[in-house]
Image (cartoon, rainbow, N blue to C red; front, side, top):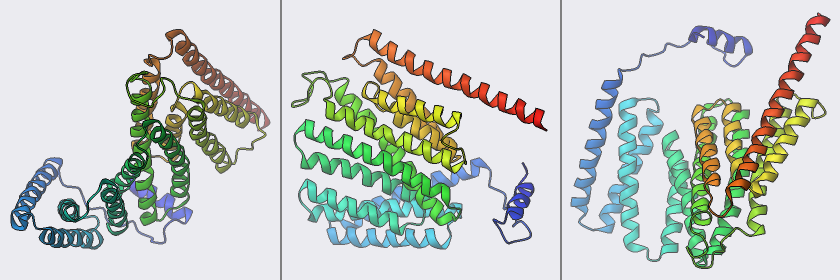
Length: 364
């Protein structure tokens, strides 16, 4: 579809009040953008070295230059949000400024927990101040990582930290659904950018936390980490089912959004299959959450989120298949049954929709 045709459709639907489509400035060739990118970040590295040499391990100087660069980046992001050259310059200035602020305050703040609290506050400030998608994505991802590290610092016992990590994982799964529901309900770009950055950060955190949990449970065995049992206890299995329940919630919300009645045969079948996948999370962990990210990416028309969901689903299935604590026959049976349920649901839905189309054609 051409841009002018898309503009006419949006104007007819009432999404824009302008009669004429605004002019679209052509993008620079990719090699010029690559040269500008390399030049700007090379200059940023030289600026960092210059500021470090000027500061000479002085916390006050690091803090002054860091606040100066962070303020410059914040002004550039708000003054010229779509400019390529100034945008890359703002990214470099923001990175340098935040790094110098961290160096300055780490010299004054002692203790791991205090430093993590400071990093959490700094990530929140960067998220609120920087009017840029990438900056907010990095800040939100850093905040989630710091929260997980804070849990580890509070609970020195390995098993308690893993249990709290599973609680955090379940909470992030439900927060992921809430954020993408809000993002799909609005058409205002600033809010759209805000919710989408948080949604991508939650998806990346779910992917990383899944690999951490698998590496600690599936690969260490009974003697790998102190205070960790060889197999996950029932409380952790229940938490994995709870995190998968976010898939059931999002499926029901999506059916309601598309005006599909819950009493219809396709809706009941989809909800039933979703419930089976959620309950299978006790045996196949994180598969339901991977499907949640995959379905959300399809519903929100987010190709990057769709790619994260595909990677997470393949990763979850592969790590479960090579889990040494469960015999191969048992894993193969579960994977075979799950795939069979999906294929059977697909065949029934295709037959249902084909019969409905035939009846509608005969009625016309």
